[in-house]
Amino acid sequence: MNKTGFIFDLDGVIVDTAKYHYLAWKNLAQELGFEFTHEQNELFKGVSRKRCLEILLDIGGITATQEQFDSWMIEKNEDYLKYIEKMDETEILPDVPKVLEYVKRHEMPIALGSASKNARPILEKVKLLSYFETIVDGNNVTKAKPDPEVFLIAAEQLGVRADQCVVFEDAQAGIAAANSADMISIGIGDAQVLSEADYNFKDFTEIDDGFLKKLIKQE
Ligand code: B16
Ligand code: MG
Image (tube, rainbow, N blue to C red):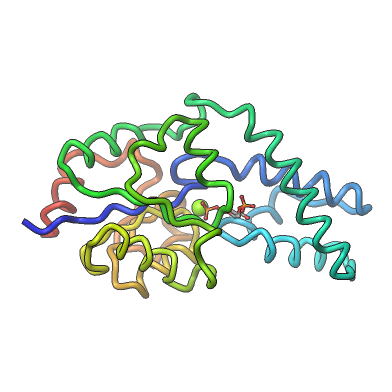
């Protein structure tokens, strides 16, 4: 039987780090003299750190020198890491371990496909790192989602054909990336926002063994 490659996004799928990204961006905006709202933070999901800062500065109407830009990138990340430092297993989103366990028990390979450059320390903090055969993140890609690069590298590293991979994603750009990589896309979150996904679930509590079995058999 051919293997199915299971690829998971991180933020919004395995853990809710969006709330910490938000706090760190909000702190920076405040320092620069403007408000950054929860609604605006939606624009940042699945988007690279660099692109987030570009959007933030646009919101604040700020033009930065390259030097300022670089130092704000560092400042935001240092602030974000202070929140990450305190994370533990209690922050894993509901039923994620149940799904990882099922996939592992059936000896299917698992990869992470995330835009974050902090993916590895976060998985260590929440004690899930050992489930992943490979971590493909913001440190390994040159093109951000919706480009399929991150997922194609993950498939290659798992040794599984792209059309035999499934991707769990919470961002529109991630679903688009999975679709253009010819992978099965599974939207986690708002089905209206993620309407391009092949399947939609509110969260992992809605995913049962029968569905996972179907993915493994690729019926
Ligand atoms: P970092 P994902 C993304 O994670 C976040 O959703 C996005 O808000 C963040 O800007 C990006 O990672 C980069 O994160 O600053 O840690 O490198 O959803 O692709 O797992
Ligand atoms: Mg995400």
